[in-house]
Length: 374
Ligand SMILES: Cc1cc2nc3c(=O)[nH]c(=O)nc-3n(C[C@H](O)[C@H](O)[C@H](O)COP(=O)(O)OP(=O)(O)OC[C@H]3O[C@@H](n4cnc5c(N)ncnc54)[C@H](O)[C@@H]3O)c2cc1C
Image 1 (cartoon, rainbow, N blue to C red):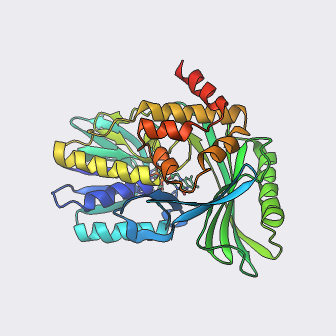
Image 2: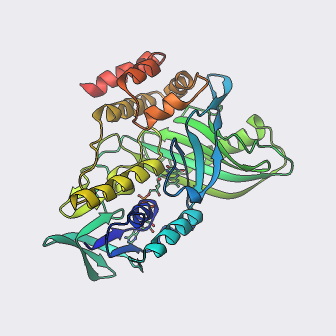
Image 3: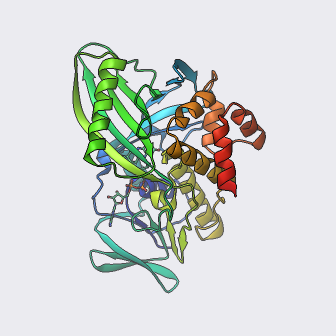
């Protein structure tokens, strides 16, 4: 069977790695990418409670994180989970090692302008030329979520200090000591060493664009956090990175004939967190398992509607009243281990576990669930 992967970013390369890991004859497999989003500049944090296929690409691992909410700081143990960071270049190198051992892969540089059904398979237009495959995995053109419930808007600074200032063993998962006036916002700190960290301002906003004024506000909030909250006087700010991720609590209809959407285009970004890395790994494994056992890639686990409802309710509550996010996170993380919360965010919790988790949540969230359920 001929396979074409449209886009060699996180989801395209993850799928390639999972295909390369199988001993069954699958392929030839072509990965097409136009280089518009260089993977070497990317990097992903995520949590996991199990070994993964691409663990060799992990460069930093943490077993605790710091949270600051409701006026109190806690160091929360991650239980069975580990919080990890993968650099884009390490990830690409790990995938290259796996695919070159396999031998059946072609990496093609080109711009994709169309994907359409053609007979039993599908045709992909690459630099104006049609490439045919039995199955096409599309992380480039669509369909993507049809409805956007909120935006995750972030801006981060790579900070270097003159003297040791960061605990390299403990990232700050969220710190709410910043203004909540415009949107539900927190600071995130990912240390690279005692004198280096990514400090990121993150907001869940109702709309994507707040214009230049908002960029200024985010920069002001970052500066204020670094100097007033962290108390860092002698530091330099290197690279700035920013992004706006659409968040959708609605399932995506991923299949178009012989074409299956993957990655962001398949709705893999978790609406209540903005994380996608582990979901993409799980999805890649499921796709390959379906190809091997069913000879098609569509026998995938169905999304469970209650998690969409929870995500929608959270986004609804915090975009109406930004202060709700801190209240929810204070209640959720007021425990010694984050494991139950991470399991819930992984959509792997039982109804009984969720009942226990939700018992301390603010009533506004129940009202939001009821609104969404109608
Ligand atoms: C700035 C940012 C930071 C993020 N950080 C995290 C994180 O820390 N943890 C986490 O879990 N999630 C994170 N995410 C969310 C998600 O994991 C990433 O967006 C992830 O890269 C999505 O994978 P993807 O394959 O869908 O898209 P991409 O990784 O963007 O891959 C798409 C690929 O398609 C190529 N391409 C695009 N258009 C064309 C075309 N027309 N023809 C050919 N090739 C094309 C691009 O060059 C790219 O390589 C982040 C998202 C952003 C935007």
